[in-house]
Image 1 (cartoon, rainbow, N blue to C red):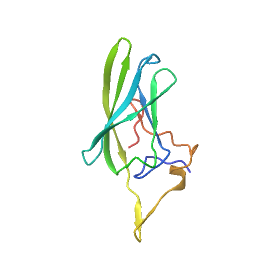
Image 2 (cartoon, one colour):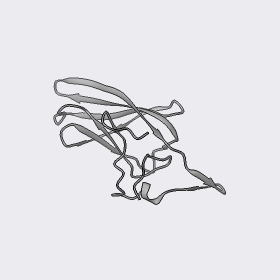
Image 3 (tube, rainbow, N blue to C red):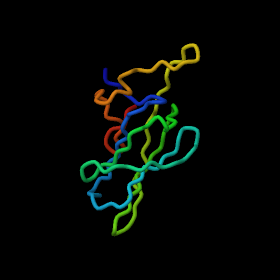
Image 4 (cartoon, one colour):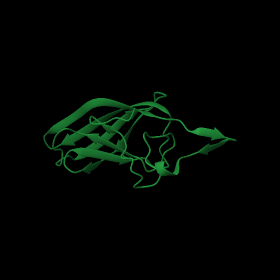
Amino acid sequence: MPVSAPHELDVGTPLILNAGCDISDATLLEIRYRTPSGATGRWDGTLSGTDYVTYIWTAHDSIEAGRWHVQLYVETPNGSWGGEVGNFTVKGNLEVEGGVVRLAAAIVAGSGYLGPVVGDVVPA
């Protein structure tokens, strides 16, 4: 079952940002973020093709529900740039007797959900 939006505590969900130009010569690819609670951080991105940067959420990431803000930061031999700030919403999960009920499709690779693509399509 494909998932329409990322959910809190997801693991394996890809976050995909579009640079809008060829960044294949980049020496640094970062996805900078601000969480719904205001915490900031950065993830090391991986080049996908020539103009997309991907980060896969892991069990070590504390993915919280709410509106997230992200920005791609790129360094190349010719300079460094920050991209447009994009945003997306992470939905909450049901709480059942202290445990979290999760949709298995959200954490299974190949579930059909490609993650938020900032600059192209952002799940509502």
